[in-house]
Image (cartoon, rainbow, N blue to C red; front, side):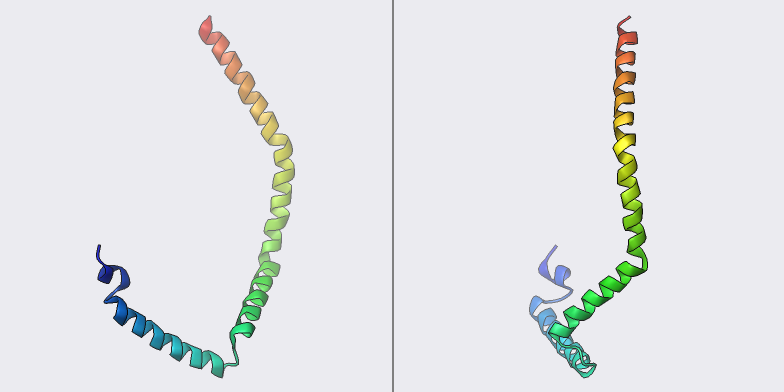
Length: 93
């Protein structure tokens, strides 16, 4: 696999196209009133809103999962150990 296949053309041509597209998008974003510090603030607000919409339910579910696992996993492990010891004893007889 050569560089042109990886980049989708010559690396210099791709860099120039990306720079031109970035300038165009930057002009549009500046016209919309979005700058660098504002952009990261808006991303933070967006992620908080997404979290508030649904990820709180995952936090609730994870809490109950961990609480139940405190009992279920040790009981499962003990039952597997007992089953393995019974099986090894029956195999040796």
